[in-house]
Length: 160
Image (cartoon, rainbow, N blue to C red):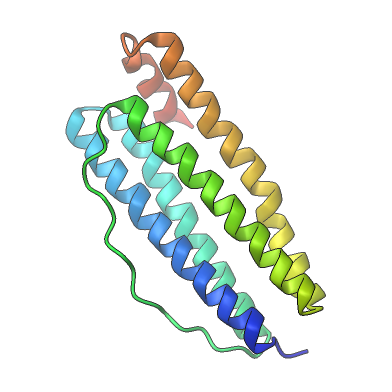
């Protein structure tokens, strides 16, 4: 069954958000790399790649359903983030935003009676639970360290 126009447009917006998220995490990665946190930078680089993989997966889904992928312009991402705690707080907040947008996507697909799209996006809802939990756990560890032992967290994230 061909994807409907409303769902197709909503997925194009989600693709744009995933691509913007990739750029955001890339910018955060470079920021922390410059600050000397190579492990945290590596972890954020992996997050950047994962977000782009999501965009590619969504593009493939639209194409397989006979829809039209439109690559929308990307807004500029920030380049300054403050402390390590500030960076990971922004990661957590952004993951919460992404969760809300994916939930909206499932709602749109439901309203349009597009069960294939609902099913496709449920995997992302499940993944977001993990993403939010991971970011929250990193923030908790930063708070516990009082930013005095961040080098250990940096080394650990390099291995993930």
